[in-house]
Structure formats: structure tokens, C-alpha cells
Image (cartoon, rainbow, N blue to C red; front, side, top):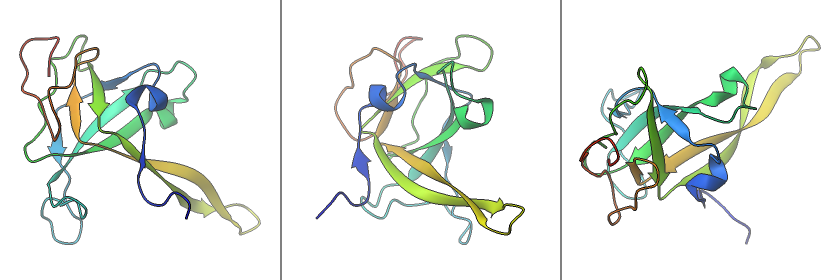
Length: 145
């Protein structure tokens, strides 16, 4: 059987130029229930971190990305280093490709593209070793998260 579901990846494979969070992690709210989303595989709460890909070749629209973090407690992100920008790395990453339909072309055919859903089990400041598994690390200065 081929790969199905979430595909494990390393942070550097997905974001070789790094990413910058633009705010704190927030609960991901289920649209129907209006409650925080719960990960179906682990039963843990889902948090979302909005980031910008630092790849200079990334187009503006494609550089804004939401990463879902599966963790018991809300991840604590590093302090901003310039304006609202906080350099971060994600641990325990997975990616799930899917087909996104975004309207129709002039001939009435659907406009589709391959999109990706990113998940992680933790978030930290760049170049810091992860202290175990399963969620956020408390901030201890500007170089740790």
C-alpha cells in the first residue's frame, strides 16, 4: 500500500529559508460546533500559527501559511525580533497534500491546484533543540520557545 494520510517531514525540507510567525498561537475553532478543534488521531486540541515563508522566491500569496499545532497546551512563541515577526521552527511536522478547487475558468472547467495542510507537534525558536515531544516549550528569553 502506498503512503496515505499525513506524511512525516522535517522542518528544513518544507521551509529551507525558515518562517516567521506574525502573532501568537490561537485555538482552531470548528466551524460547525464553535468549539476548539480536536485532532482525531491524538484527541489533543488543535492550535493554529500563522506564518510567512521566508523563501525569497515564494510569491506573496503563497508565502502566507497556517500551521496546525497538535498540543495539550497553547504553544508559546518566541518574542518578536522585528515588528510582529517571530522566527520559529516546527517539530514533529507532517504534510497532507490535497486538491483545492478555486472557481472555474472561462470555459467552465474547475480551477484546481495541489495544496498542502501542515501539522506539527511543537514549535520553538530556530536552532534550539526540542526538549522532548508533545507540544509547546515555555519561552525562556528571545532564543527559546
